[in-house]
Length: 124
Length: 267
Image 1: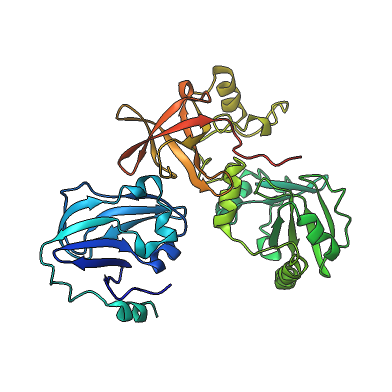
Image 2: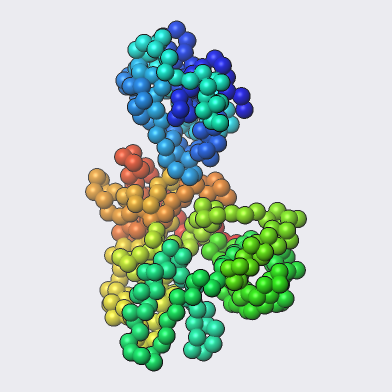
């Protein structure tokens, strides 16, 4: 699966797609492959402040529970409710499935993140 | 642990590989005096390969000099597998038909490759402990270190049928008979999750906000497409249909007590 060029990536395998002052956050195809079948996604409430690099929730697969880390700081303005009933869409469409939308504290501050080709080299 | 009676006074004990030193030390400590019995850790003389599933007989038989069709479940025989000297038992920890093959370690690679080759048409694949753990839990087979340990009794684990009650004496018999007479205060039950997520080993069973029990195993079963598990709960929560409240990493989740096993193969 290709890693879209319209977004940035973290070394922890999250992606963020920035439009204006909001960012949509999800996990990469590599991450879902490593996790295996996803059975639960625990997400924060709307209004929660998240800081770059900090955990904003967790994702549980058959194998294990893993933390989700925010690529950038901001305030949660929407949570993908589809994941409550159908967490498996993270497996089937990882790059089309955002988990949270965040109003970014500084939308232009994405320099530390990887672009798609840097992320693919990071995967090796 | 499985016990193989090789001869009237000769037994082979197959223990969990991670417990070899601990189990060996305990068993050796029970030998009271010289001449009573001799205990030898012969682990390094054997490699063990399990082939499990409905197609196991068809895959193994062409490689094996022993006649396997008549071998009863949980019996064993001797023979050769892929020209390697072997002890073959109709056992396994998956709840399916299958065999466990004990061979000298230097033959393990040959036997393994021969099984994969013979099993190609039957889609035999290598699999590890993760897959085994899902299978044994579907079959509700208790795992030492998860569901049973030094703090649990066979009665609490609903394994009373394994105990040789007719024997006058065995280690721990007074305590077990007493517990049998008085009744246990907790028991291992199976549950299915009502809420999403998996309740895993060590998670607490709650009443109000007080812990009253503990989850011992939990997983998502690919076969039943449900999250299942086993837990020790107080007697009043053991009836199938009882609702359990579980602490899943700080999230209160509900589960229903169901009869064990979760899956039983057709005879």
